[in-house]
Length: 452
Ligand SMILES: Cc1cc2nc3c(=O)[nH]c(=O)nc-3n(C[C@H](O)[C@H](O)[C@H](O)COP(=O)(O)OP(=O)(O)OC[C@H]3O[C@@H](n4cnc5c(N)ncnc54)[C@H](O)[C@@H]3O)c2cc1C
Image 1 (cartoon, protein in one colour):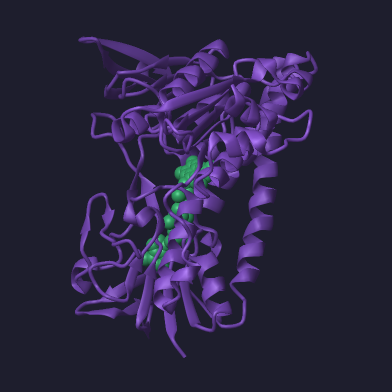
Image 2 (image 1 turned 90 degrees about the vertical axis):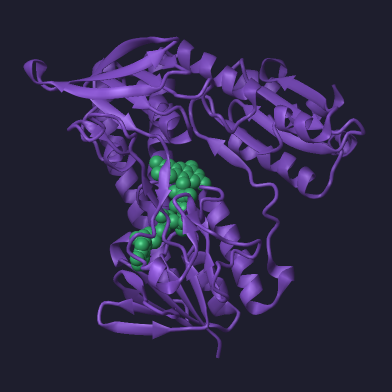
């Protein structure tokens, strides 16, 4: 029986383990038992989405006058409890999935045996297999500036278990992680400032969506500084250790004073313990080098998810692991399409994207068509008080083939999949327009944009 060793039981590891076992492989998974589910379940997607939901509910109650500002700290405490319950339930689910017949779980940390890239050490045990899947994820990165490790400067993981709502929060980094925390803590009553190095927040998103989100966050009272590299952080010991974050803007230095600083400037691949050098597996500081099958420089050794640095999203990690598995099994028909991976940011309002941004589409295709529809003209959006500034934007070739979809507004993270499906199947504006959408739904916005 063919044997597969999987290092890491996050989204890149555990789903592949189950599929591989169902396909008849003998599967060995290595991770710490208390960390199954990986970053996604324990310190990433799931806990943040729990807080995002509780924060959005607090927003609605506050807007309706049903929640006093003094009650927000209690709502935050309730949100932390609910988050732990949800994580616990899902972790039990992953643990039982890892009991699927054919899978053996090895508690511990793995590293390659020097000179033998097909053998691993886990404690006293040595495991050997023809196929090895590295899915060890990533860890938070810190800016190389003075004071980056000052007390009170937290990672996203530490921020998730912060037991109080800081009065003044400074978020360094206007990417997905930084903005979700900014949005959540604003809802729970913090005064929030975001400092972003790039000229716009959410650099990977379409410019129209990023600009609208920045405006919406500003309307909610969040201060956003773009084009502003942080230069230093220091704690003022005479003022209870309050934190001073210095940043440069248009040639001059300004300062933000905060009680807590969130460092959300991206993540680095986690492979330092693996002895990649000893195993001869090629890598750069951005990740383990892989080909289109996720195979590393060593045949039979694969690297998926955050550790290869290609696309730092949970569903990308899982999809890449299925790509690797299809290659291991010699069944290319099982490989998913990695070309159009949707992404979402769960701020209030939500944003989502798939395919090419308008700028990228113009770069590749020259001429493009852009179609838009607005939440303010949609019956369902108005009836459920959805953000009036919501927008659906579709980017197509001149003959109408969909290239990209971009949404800001309620349920953006769900709606995006209809556009993803059309892009996946080579669909056109006409296909989207001719498909009947139920009324009254937000999904009518997609057909409306297509029919504009
Ligand atoms: C705050 C935050 C919010 C996020 N929100 C989202 C979101 O909403 N949607 C989304 O798609 N993505 C989100 N992400 C990103 C997502 O969490 C990652 O892309 C995803 O977890 C990557 O999966 P992975 O399997 O590659 O790695 P991980 O999930 O990090 O799993 C790696 C596993 O490997 C184990 N491991 C590491 N080294 C070893 C070793 N030597 N031996 C044995 N085991 C080892 C670790 O213990 C861990 O369990 C978020 C991330 C953060 C930080």
